[in-house]
Length: 469
Image 1 (spheres, rainbow, N blue to C red):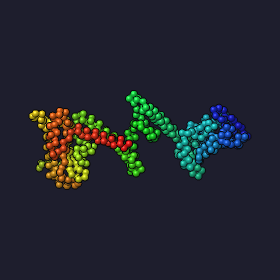
Image 2 (spheres, rainbow, N blue to C red):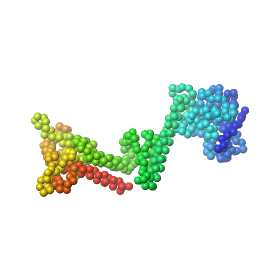
Image 3 (cartoon, rainbow, N blue to C red):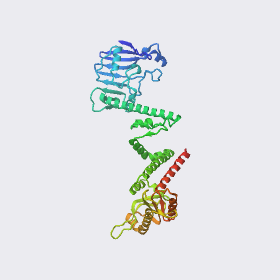
Image 4 (cartoon, helix red, strand yellow):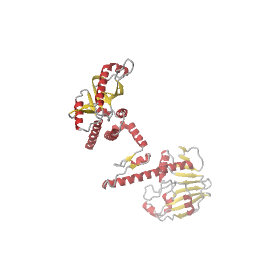
C-alpha cells in the first residue's frame, strides 16, 4: 500500500513523500517533486507520481537505514538523479531508529540523523557541503556505498568487489570534526583577511596618516596561507614556521622556478637582498651607537663579508678570519694575526683587513697652526698592518704549504684598516685626509664611511628596482 505526505515547508515549492511497505518491518520512502520543480525541469507535470524517486530504505528488522541522496533542483540537468557522481547510498547500521509510519514521524526520524547529514528531504538528503571532500575521497577510491556502523571497528575497510566502504561511527565523527575544524579556520582566516583588505583599501583612498594601513596577521595554518596568498599589496605578518616553510619551498624548487619564471625569481632575489640590506644598515647604525669590542665588529663582518669588498676597488672574497701571517719566535710565541685575510676573486692577490673600533680617535693633539698629528691608535694600527703585510710576504710559501691553501698570491698585498669615525672638526678632517691619502700601502676607512657606502648601495638597488618597474 502507498501513502503520500506533503512537506509543510512554506519557503519553497513543497515536495511530497510516498511510503511503500514491501514487507513487515521494511519501508521504502520515495520523493515526489512539486509541480513547480517539474515545470522548471520541463518534464510531465500531469502525473507527478510517475517521477517518484527512491530516497530512503528503512529496515527495522535488520536495524539499518539506507539513504539514496538525490538532486532535487529542477533547474539542474541531473534533476532526480544521484546527487553524487559515484556514491549511490549511505547506510546507517545499528542506530536503533524508530520505524516511521507518517509524515511527522519521517521528519522526526530525519532530525535524529547524525551531525553532518542533510536532514531536509526537499534538499535530497546526503551529507552537508562541509563533508564534500570526504565524498570526493571515497569516490576517488571507487566507493559506491558508504556504511557507517554504530559499533567499534579497529580499522575502516574498502571492498573493491562490492565497492563498499565500512566506517565506524567514531571514525566518521572524527573525520567530520577535522573537516569542520578546517572550515572554521577558513572562515576565521577569511574574515580576518577581508577586514584587513577593507581597511587598507579604504585607507589607500583616504589619508594614510589619519587612517593607517594595518599589517595582515594570519594564523599559522596552511589553510590561512592559501586564503591569504592572492591578497595583493598588503603586508602579511608571517610566523617563524611560515618563514621557514617559505624558504624551504624556494630552496627545493629554485631550479624549477628559475626555468619557469626567471624574471620573478630574479625580482624575488632582488627584493630579499634589498630588505636584508635595510636590516643590515639598521643593525650597523645601532652598533655605531654603542661601545662594542673589536670582536663584535669582527662578527658582523664575518657574517656579512661583502661589506669588506667595499673597502677595496675590486671584488674580494674572504679566505680566513683571525689568520696567522707568520712571525713566530723561537720560543713558539708571537704569531702575527690579522683580523681578515682576503683575496682578489679574479687574480688571487692577497688582501689584509684589520678591524679596530669606532671609538678610536683618528687625530692627536694640535701640532701647529690647525695641523693635527695622527693619533697613537691610528699610527700604531697602521704600523701593525704594515708589519702583517711584511710577515705575510716573507712567509707565504710556508703558510700555503701548512694550510693547504695554494690559490693565494702576494704579488702586491692590499691592506685596509677600518678604524674610528670621521672627526666633526673641519681642521681635524683636513689633517686626517692629508695623512691617509699619503698612506700608499694601507687604505684607511672609517666605520661611518662604510655605513654611507651601505646606504649608497641601498639607494642604487632601490633606484634600479623603480626603473625596472
